[in-house]
Image 1 (spheres, rainbow, N blue to C red):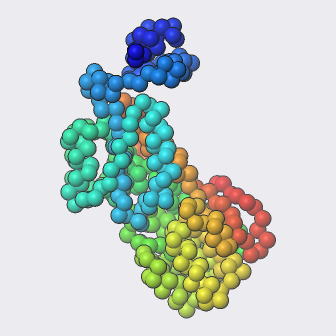
Image 2 (cartoon, rainbow, N blue to C red):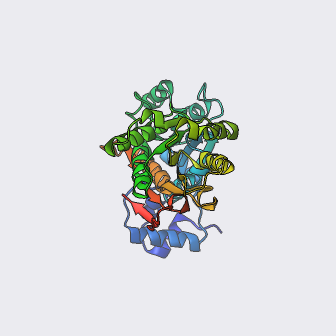
Length: 347
């Protein structure tokens, strides 16, 4: 015979209504009581009836995560994987399920609209690349909880969003290179129009100004995507910027192709050229030499997005609407030409 709520309540020594509130997450219960109830549920192999819960609470007990699989510039799969793990963990802890869908038809925002209009989920986490005025208007009219991963463009920033601190990341990268003995850094970006790239360019140029390095605009190279485009930019680099001695790359892929082309031309890393890249995953520590990185806790990013969404679903408003996860420098061989010995910097 299947265990019931009454069986759980009897084993723990609480009222059935307390067990029900823990299962449904409808009231504050002490951590000690909650742990006892959850342990009893495991011991008695009790599994709540999702359909019954939904009928009683008017809730799907599911949140949606939309992934724009076609946008390699913003949140690639490598970037997302730890964030997704964190979102899944928070979702499970709250007694919810996670539904992941790909926004395959961004023109009509079908993926998001279907989730909302067909009542498939109680809230949704979106990549910034899926945002539009029309979609925001729909979500706002429906009073539907949502959180954006990535900083939106002007006009959409009034919504709740989380992102890494891209501006500060570039600032830290410039400081690290100068502290390591380099004097003429440049920045490789894939797309100057992308918001996160704009923030990286801003931090880069501000820090150059502070250190008295001229020509900030000319020191930003837009390399595009794809191996051939990136290598072409790297091939003509020393002619275009003859004094350059260090490069900040926007991601691992750009760094890989830049390093490959520089080595082909006889440039030694880190002796002749220092290389630092945004994002630690998936390749940085396995390159030769291992890459110094501007790292961000992507697990924390996903955890933050999920917790903000659940607060919104409970109608708990936060004063802040934008949340930036700070960055740190992890120092490896690609910038250690001058005996720079620190393993990690956090600022």
